[in-house]
Every structure is written in C-alpha cells, then in structure tokens.
Length: 402
Image 1 (tube, one colour):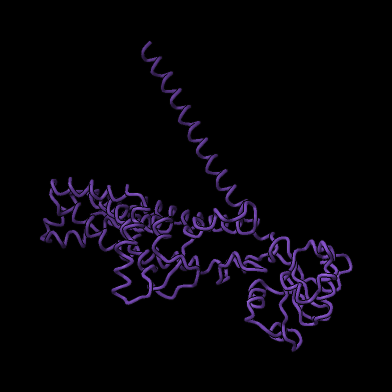
Image 2 (spheres, rainbow, N blue to C red; image 1 turned 120 degrees about the vertical axis):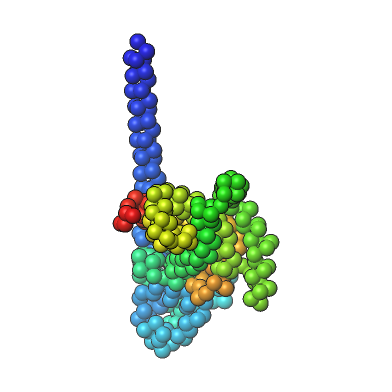
C-alpha cells in the first residue's frame, strides 16, 4: 500500500514538474514573440514625425530626403538646395509658428480657419522654402509638393550614428553610438575584472586554508546581492570624482567609471564559476604533477588552469553577460551621452540605460516606443549568444587527460 501511494505521489510530482516546465517554456516564447512583434514595427513607420508632412515648392527638383538630411536642413547645417542635389538656391525653413511672418491676421481668419489655404500659398510663393506642418492642414489642390513619405529603413537604424528620438521633423534612431558605448563599457569591465577575479579564484581554490575560504566565500557572494543602485551611488560618490581628479576631466561620468563599477559587479560571477571549475580538477591529476617534481605554482599554471580552461572561459563569458545587461549603475555613472565614443574617458550611453531612461517618456505604440523595443531585441540576441557560448564552453571536455 505504501509503495503504491509513493508511486502515485511520484506520478503527480512528475506531471506537476512537466506542466511547470511547459508553462515556463510557453511564457518565454510569448515574451520573445511580444518583444520582436513590438520592435519590428519600426520599419513600417514613416521617417517623418507621425501626423506631420514636409512640403517644398513644386518647382523644386528634390523629392526625397533622409532623416539625417532633414535634421541638418532644419538645424541650418545645410543652407542651399545644391547641397542636396537641387538648384543653387538658399533654403528657407518654415515651421507653423512662422506663419505670422507670411500672412496677416485677416488672411488667417478670425478662427484661423484659412491656415490651410495660407500654407498652400506661402509654399507656392517661395521657391526655396521647405515647410513642416501638421497633415491636417494639407488641403486638396495643395500648391506645393509633399516630400515623398518613406519608412525608416534597417540601414538607418543599424548603421546610423545619431540617436536623437526627439528630433524634428524626423527622429533619428541610429544605434551605433549605443552599441559602441555598450561594448566599450562591457569589454573594459571584463579586462579589469578578469585578472583580479582569476587571482582570487586561484587563491581560494588552491592556496587558501579552510578558515580563510569560509570567510571569503560569503563576502564574495554578498557582493552579488547588493542592489545595482547602491553600486551606482558608490560610483557617483567615489569613482566619478576620483577619475575626474586623476585625469583632469571636466566631468567624471565616463565609460571608465562605468567599466570600474561593472568590473566590481562582475567579480562574484567570475570568481564563483572559475573557483568551482578549478576545484573540480581531479586530485590525482595534481598529485601526479607534484610527483614528477613540479612545484605548486608550476602545477597550477601548467596543469590546473589548462584542465579547467572551459570553466574559466564560461566564467568570462558569463561575466560579460552580467556587464552587458546592467542598467541602473551604468545609467548613473557613464554620463548618458548618445555619441559615438572614441575612448574610455568620454561620456557614453549603453543599450540598457537607453531603454531605462526613455521608455517612460515614449508614447505607447509610437515610433520611439518601437525603437526601444527593437533595442531590447538586439540586447536579447546578444545575451542569447553569450548564454549559448557559455553553455557550450561549460560542457566542453578537456582535451588532455593526465
């Protein structure tokens, strides 16, 4: 009877675990599907701000402008149509706020009901004009020419070097500054954390006695439990002023500050995984090396580390993943500047920090909202590749058996 009861309990537990695993898998798939569904809609969105149009004179030979060109025109960095392949004629920028300079109050009407007609006349009367106004004022028989409406292209998103989602008349969603900022901060953090992490892992696994190991182990694990915002405050109070003084910078919020903070945050992962890998080296392998006359350091360098290289590489890759996905601490100490960095002593912005800083202000379902979700897709792909790499390295068997 007891045996039958235990068997029933085991079957129930097996079914519960199977259902739990299935629910978890379906949930992950739905999250990924939702993430990509929201993000991929960016490439079906118009380049010009939604609800607005850009119009020129009918005689103007320019009929298509990229978002970058539109920004440069309205910022008056481009001042002649010849720079855009048109006639040698100065560019006259017109926004709806400028309408009073071209039309009287009588022409506009008591209730501004004649604004559409005035806009049509103004664009027709000024050959070099480019006008930006709401599409509700675009009447039938408009005397100007609307610039061809084009959608945001993958090339503009993946290869663009400007991230300016509030630019008018066309927002810019170039992710190169964000990707470069993420790589600068993450890779530098690993370069800082790897030597120190490996040194601590080797010491704890091979050199420290039990008493010291019992003290160091909880302290290192405690580092992993500290909230990231606390690391951010520590960086603002200690790391940022120190970097500013040492390098004589106007501000200390740089990629270097973010790298130092991320290095500290990645240490527990690197130390724990690497130490476990080193401690799993068979005792017979080490004793054989010592029996052949090798010193303890020679055994560590030539036997232990090569034998545990797969676990060490997994620690490195997992540390990179920890650094790439960090948000709050990086947002607080890196300067949050979306420009292409050329060194560690410049302010940067990472992908996670961008999502955290801008998602609350992006209109739900808008172009900016979709661009941030697509950034999430990119981050998901990066972390997925890192996780798969870590699993492959962790499962790899050492080639040499001693």
